[in-house]
Image 1 (spheres, protein in one colour):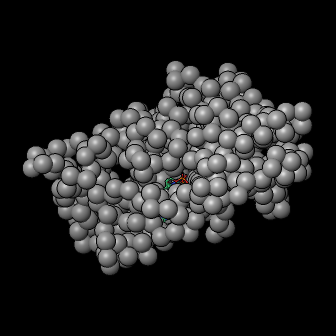
Image 2: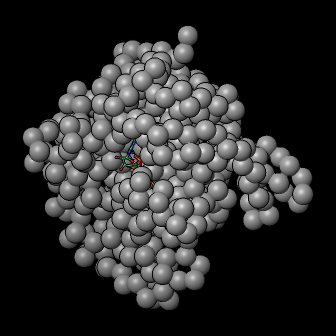
Length: 427
Ligand code: GDP
Ligand code: IMO
Ligand code: MG
């Protein structure tokens, strides 16, 4: 049996969706463990593009069970729309879904509060999908859980308990709140369709592992957006790191075999917050255009910059990475020299550590690596890559101290170089 956690190794949008879709080809179950519709995971198969926000990215493989675990925050209307969209394309989804009754629900008013708060001077540039309010309601123990809202005998009481405490604050930021009855009217038709999908995610995963099934836990966002280990306060409101899979699903750490970190060959960030290797001006613009770096959820332009090795080492440590996947290597074609951050100076001292607590006072130190001019999108083995591209990958592997399992050279499922089988690990 193999249980694999896939995490974003940067600030999100590393290409997790593409890689989880690939891994799911050989998996029996794919599990989302945290976050909500702030995620936007792009899958491209034979030129057709699909973006999932809530459904696990293994959903295109008809034999994969798709689990939405209790660590998630779920906008039920978005979930239902995603299920229907795939069904309209001829893919049956609901029979192989397990929707945790303990996941929390994001209601439209929480998204409105998120957007109203986000418009102010303290904005961190959220996706406006209601993530912060839903997780803060969960922590405040007034949240509405999927199981509560799908149960007609509990729904109204739970909605009242959630909405009433918001009245004063909502007025102050100009957001309007529904009454519990209005919220009920919104929930009821959705609830009827989603109720058959309810199931205990922890038990489903446990049974799968006992059957020796292959289970992929799909992270959302990225490690540097983690509530505890990211660039706080410019983070999301959940634990995006590998440990978040254990708490978010109800699976013990001893059950996990491998932790795979996905990183771009360069770096992007969407939203505000520190980004030491960011390229501003035309250099950033050309990387953005080459990489088509626009958010899959909000369409916002992503900030672009060079790879940050101290950050990657930090990410390898806090997740316990066993494997790396490098994506978008094709986008670096044409750069004569590729600068990479190899360390920082903080108050005049050089360090190879990622100075997460003093990024404002830290300056990246770069080394240049030889680039290449060849189009990489047709490469399917390491030997197909130019020598300098292979050197770039070997340099990342050596300096992060984690073996590279796959290299992605294009958005399509097929545009991938496999170095070793992630399920088996490198021998
Ligand atoms: P995720 O949130 O981590 O799943 O990533 P997103 O889907 O938000 O963003 C990654 C973008 O890069 C998507 O548009 C993908 O189709 C695209 N992509 C993924 N891997 C590659 C690659 O190797 N090369 C290119 N050119 N595009 C890629
Ligand atoms: P995927 O799964 C990139 C960012 C937002 C903002 C911060 C907080 O596609 O990689 P939130 O709406 O979560 O309260 O916003 O986190 N953010 C993401 N950035 N990819 C994501 O998801 C993100 N999810 C949240 O831009 O800076
Ligand atoms: Mg994304």
